[in-house]
Amino acid sequence: MQVRTRHTPTFGVARLVLAPAEPVLVDRASLVATSYGVAFDTRAKVGGVAGTVCTAGPEGGWVDVAPALPGDLHVMELDGNGGWCVARNSWLAAAGTVAMDPSAPPVRALHGGDNGFLHYLYGTGPVVLACYGVLDLVTLDAGELVTLESGHVVGFADTVQCRLRAVSPGSFQSVRNGEGLVLDFAGPGLVLTRTRSPRSLVTWLRDNGFSARS
Image 1: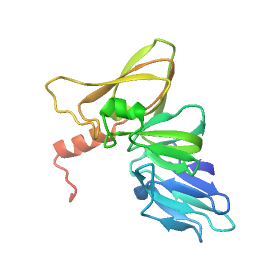
Image 2: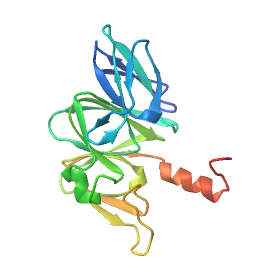
Image 3: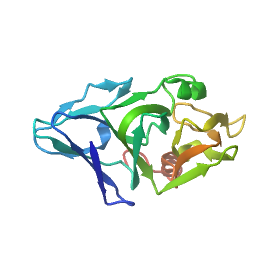
Image 4: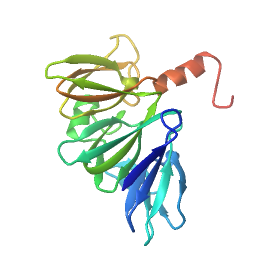
């Protein structure tokens, strides 16, 4: 699979160019368009992650995906050496050679099960991640520490040590969507962040009288 992006960094769209009979797993809500002849399986699950598997026809094809919120895109190439923890609301698509596991040890150690706000990805091939706002790369040296609010985390390499904790002991907390939680990171490794938090948008809309029917 080859990935070609356009309209970044404001309204990113990714075109996934597929070889003959090549599959790709995409987030169901992110699908925009495909070339004629691409087959869909909307009931598919890869490693427990629900999505739509799009498979190219005998002559190949393409699939366009885009996030619901405006912002940047990041194409990450997995090389089989280690994996990545990514925010569940940040992934748009993954090559058929990439495995996704929401209950893998690196994420289970953080939120205790497969219903948390992080997925674990490993294998080889490209992964397309969405970023509400602009993507920031945080490169941590060995022993370097940083704390990030969970809504601003796009993903991090499994070489990074990570601890999940409450913003305040008395505040509401949810491992389902990361509300009320921060992540402490220790290098070495790379952390991907976004300048806007989708959860902050939801809070702003609610506090200003907007609803799903507005």
